Amino acid sequence: MPELPEVETVCLALSKILNNSRVNNVKITRKDLRWNIKENLETCLKEKILKKPFRRGKYILIPTSEKHILLIHLGMSGTIKIISGEYNISKHDHVKINIETKENKFFSLVYNDPRRFGYVDFFHVNRIENHFLLKKLGVEPLQNDFTIHYLQKKISKKSKCVKNFIMDQSIIAGIGNIYASEILHRANINPLRAVNNLNTEQLKSIIEATKFILKKSIKVGGTTIKNHMQPDGKLGYFAQKLQVYGKNKHNCNKCNNIITQINISNRSTYFCNNCQK
Ligand SMILES: [Zn+2]
Image 1: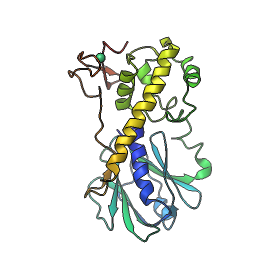
Image 2: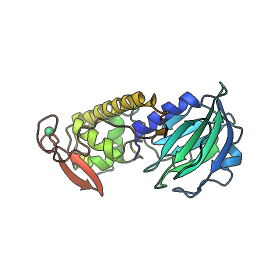
Image 3: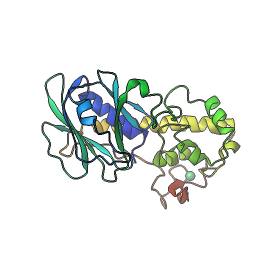
Image 4: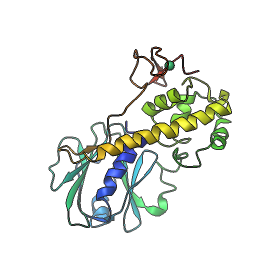
């Protein structure tokens, strides 16, 4: 599932194309994603100007010239394809947006999602604060308000395990299952620890590890963008240099101990029981 760094990478790639580009037409081949796409999306978007996208949590938000927002969520398996010129719909392509850039170049933006857990929405910018997917999102982990004070405020009511805590989108927006394991390994904290038992130093190390892991991954994603015009043009995933996720039975890169795999809330979780206390 694409997490914050993957979504940020998609935004970055889109911003190279969507910089006052005009929508020539929109084709929806399948409406029933996680929620149904609005009936009028095609007509609402047509002939609108799309501006540079930005990210909130795991959501891609594309402002239009007429104070609307096009929201794209990649869900579990969604990708965006940026194809130069015309493009014929293929399997699992649900939305195709044909655009013309300021430089009169033509592109097709295609939303592809085999499992259909993603979503595409369009709404007035006034509704951004109250949009059902956005209104409960917690702090952006790469911004300055992700602080010890913020975490302590959120912890007082919570006794859940630290892994579920950092994956809770209403607390920190954008961290999913893969990066949660990576962050806790870097912070030397066992994913099963009750979050209200962590001391200030440990909370500090979670903040440091979160910013470090996410920034490093965004950098890796950025280097893959120049290849986004590959024949399939797919964006949404890139090869990450992971330290623990999926590395069960491998050696920990810090201490050489064997990495353990467990399930927390039915999600695979990887950690080193020697380094992570
Ligand atoms: Zn270790």
